Length: 316
Ligand code: PMV
Image 1: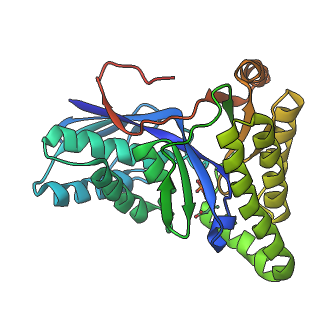
Image 2 (image 1 turned 135 degrees about the vertical axis):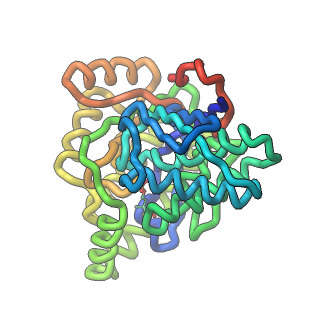
Image 3 (image 1 turned 30 degrees about the vertical axis):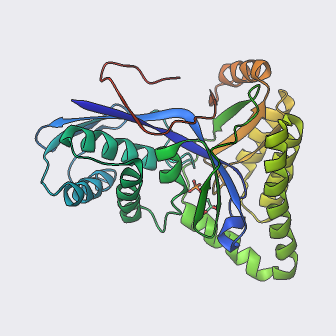
């Protein structure tokens, strides 16, 4: 049996504005999908979803990935696949990309073929394309390589020399509302067209936020990062990407002492993120969990996909 883990991701700044050619900034986080494979009879078992039957909604990703793996390896494979992914689904955290990347990495390892991380990313991206409407590739890139990613117009730059300030934790809270990226992107673009002269300034401000955020990261300026998150959230709100539930959670995070908070990814549900110093984050998370929220602390993760022993627990 061969097992691999791959991380989830969040978008720190720039979502939606990237659709009009502005830059975005994403980071991999310490929440992982673990996939184990062994020769078998095409069974897929998920800790969270149970047995994935042939033809079921979530099965397509696996079937597509296997097809591309077979093409790459030049041989056919018949596997039993075990998935353990505590990454919330359809919440903007890149859960399917993390699963696809871990699956490809584990399977290529099992097949004992030579491969690079770039091969893993490419194959996982092909599988993602089959199940998501025009995926940007951010999720598969971050699940493969980890770290901070600057991207613009399909061009990806992994910022290997940059790390978020060390005394900083990310707080992820799930609204529990699953949403479709495609639908929200279309609605936001609709507003863009209706208020183009105004929207251009909003998007330009989005670009400046990413530039200023990069400087703040280099300087280790947590407070400024939090403030930029709030401004970014205001711009996203003005374009219709937030929702009452997201806004409530953002206020909750701020009331509890977060330095900043915003939606992450498409918005109108999914996950909301907050920034806080490490000590404060522990307090905030305890309060959120006590109040019944599905929330967790995540650290930036800089390693990306890797093998793991089958009996090894997911890192927290
Ligand atoms: O919520 P997610 O992870 O699917 O991210 C969507 C990000 C958008 O900028 C809204 C769309 C895109 O393709 O970049």
